[in-house]
Structures are given as structure tokens and as C-alpha cells.
Image 1 (cartoon, one colour):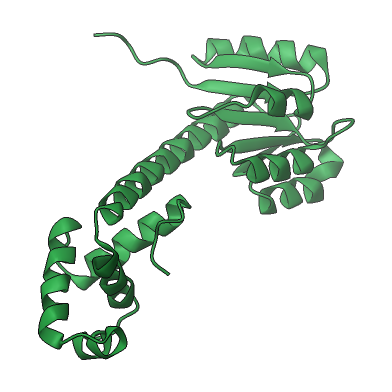
Image 2: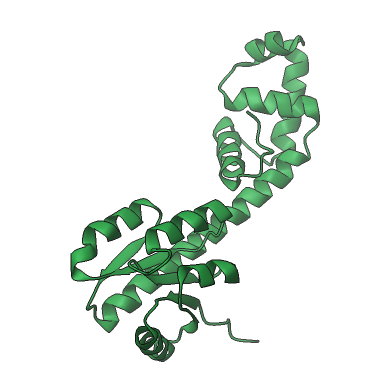
Length: 211
């Protein structure tokens, strides 16, 4: 059985000596490393999960904060750890508000770096699991008929059977039949199950979730 590929760390720093130092250090820690001399170079490479980004905050052209904003706009869902100089902590806090999951204040220890990247790896795994749940939820919801989807949308809003019947101009008995089919197709055992499925689909951003 093949061993899993090591996690990839995308290192972004305009200082060549820093990139080379990090490449060597991360290699000793069992990480695969890809180097970029600018935020633009990373965006042009369009990295995909799994993996994480380790980036300096202050860089010419595009800084770390703008990089995070551009990644969000482009749907690049990879955890980001930012590196900051002593006087740049407020900037790093802004970066975290823009989506970074952690920041390291220079100079940092090897242990602190590895710990931050492990946290990023765990966050990446959590996001991958959430994407898988979202895809499965969207797939199940897509199997509903248009009427079943209408009933589903009203169920997750908390409407009782009679209210749904009145809203859709159907008998309560008909709505009960649709509800039973919705529960069966979505493999749900309760209303909370339906709500969680709806939330997963909504989180997936697929646009197929009932409104």
C-alpha cells in the first residue's frame, strides 16, 4: 500500500534567503514545499487542497492581506498562516480577520512553525470533510422532485404540516406523503437531520439549497 503524500506547504516570501531556509527546514519536518517569490505568483499557480499557505505579511506589490482577500474571491480554500515582523502584529491581526488561521511573529522557533502548520493541516482536513458533506447534501437534495423540494424548504423553516399545506394549496395528507418521501430520499430520521443537511448544502455554496 502506497504511503500518503506529505502535506504541501506553499511558502510565499519575497526574500530568497528566507524561502530557501524555510524550504530546508520544512523538508526536515516531512513537508513537501513549493516556493513563490510573490503573492501574485501563488495566485497564478492556483494551488488546490490539500495543503496550506505560509506567507509573509509585508511584501511588495501585493501584501499578505490582499493575498487572503484575493484567495477568498477566487475560491482558493486553503488554510493560511502568516509570518510577521515584530512591529507588524496589528497587520497580522488584520490578516486573521481576513481569513488567516494563525500568525507567527519573527523570529519564531522551529517548534512554533511546525505546530502552526500542523494546525493548518488539521483545519484543511476539517474543510475537506465539510466540502464532502456539502457535496453529498447537494447530491441528495438534487434527487428531490420540485414539489418535494418545496416541502423540504418549508420544513427546514419550521412550518408545521398544516401551514405547509395551506401555503402550497394541498391537503395535509398529501404533504405528509411528500414529507415521508423527503425524509426517505435524504436519509433523515428527524427534522434536525433535515436542518443539518440543509446547512451542509448551504455551506457548500452550490446554489441548490432551498431558500
